[in-house]
Length: 113
Image 1: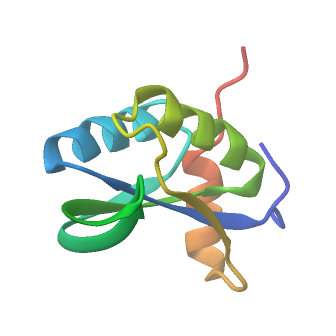
Image 2: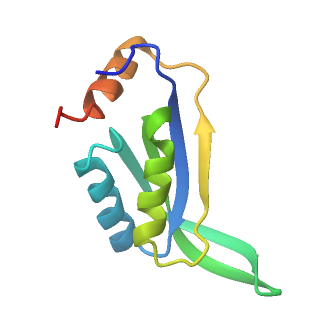
């Protein structure tokens, strides 16, 4: 088990569809790379892409994990994402409720090999 004072981070990303987000999120949680993912459908994005302003309907995913797993989660997102340049932002969390922190650490604690 990791130290009780280990930092927690959120990873923010977007997907083009609810189905792709759910498949990716479930895989991340099943692999114990995150304790929880929140999937928020119905977002409208306006963004620059290849010299033009584009509009897209997207799904937001917030991934809750320990800081030590952030790079592994980033790689998992990129590996299965349909976007060539997915948004992947790692957001440090300043404060976490003690019980939630303990649960998150337990949920992402990989069994010994």
